[in-house]
Image 1 (spheres, rainbow, N blue to C red):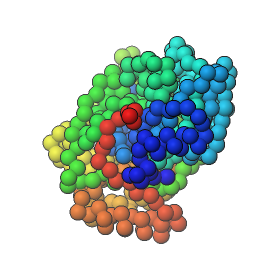
Image 2 (tube, rainbow, N blue to C red):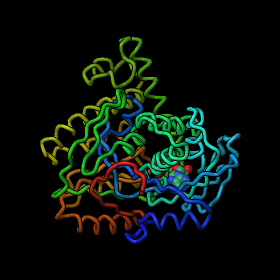
Image 3 (cartoon, rainbow, N blue to C red):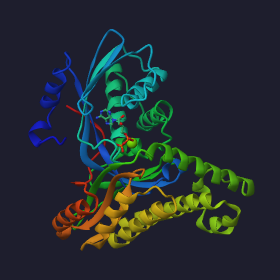
Length: 389
Ligand code: ADP
Ligand code: MG
């Protein structure tokens, strides 16, 4: 789904809401995120460098007074109802949404029910974090019903907790954080330990960020994600035995890792090597961006993919095919998988004059090789979640 300019209005979203519910809704929007570099570093208390893409999840929300939650998702084409006194995971799409409601109630943000209409143009399960977008839009919507506000970092934490506890995905804070704090025409350099961040200007006149959706999602994704996190924790445990000051892979330098590598089992060593080297690549990428060195950034993006593929082992045939095609095309400075892996999207840094050719070639060659028609998204980085007034 992609809303045309005419449909991208408050009136349109209200009229969609009225197909299912009565009342006067407020409208909350949250964009998709693309992580330029910093794959699987967030839950290791490391660094990331995401931007926001101009595709939104929109939530129209109005109060009820009977302690019930009625949620319609246009994408799922389904209406689900819940009693607010009994919010439990059902193992289905609504868990991401109900989890946020539950967390807010536990924080004492109390309300008497809601009608919710969700409309998203973010590919679902495509690695652009439709999950965090819907969580953030819902959180902002519920807070508006309660008539209260919350610190922005706390909103990100509530949404992350919903995903960790209610859905069972042990994901980090990057997605929710950038979806709330992102800035137009900037990337966000985030320290996932301290939550200190810096907006880094992206001069995209000569360079475009092009996202290619492989249109595949392997079932492995969720369990492998949690498995990788456990492997990193095992690495930390082993390091801690030698250097008590190490509390996360963030605390390990490349030099230290090289010194100690023989003390680690092969798989753990590879996972640690990815995270430690990826943190260094993020720092170098920020430096490159500040100096307008897009070729350097592109090279780091390529190295990031190779490490995710070989050391972290979260890529897949379709992602590697997409990346290989991209790198063979003129004007491509870098290409990597973005998001958790095992399908979803690649992010590509492409010189503007080559973008048309890039889109044509990647579409036809990827389809030739896999039988799948990719989707391509291009946009200037947009700002974070907002209320449409
Ligand atoms: P992504 O990479 O898109 O974040 P995830 O698997 O993490 O992929 O999250 C996708 C899940 O988020 C969906 O299966 C669903 O549970 C929830 N979700 C996201 N967008 C919507 C929507 N528009 N309507 C209903 N559920 C949604
Ligand atoms: Mg997600």
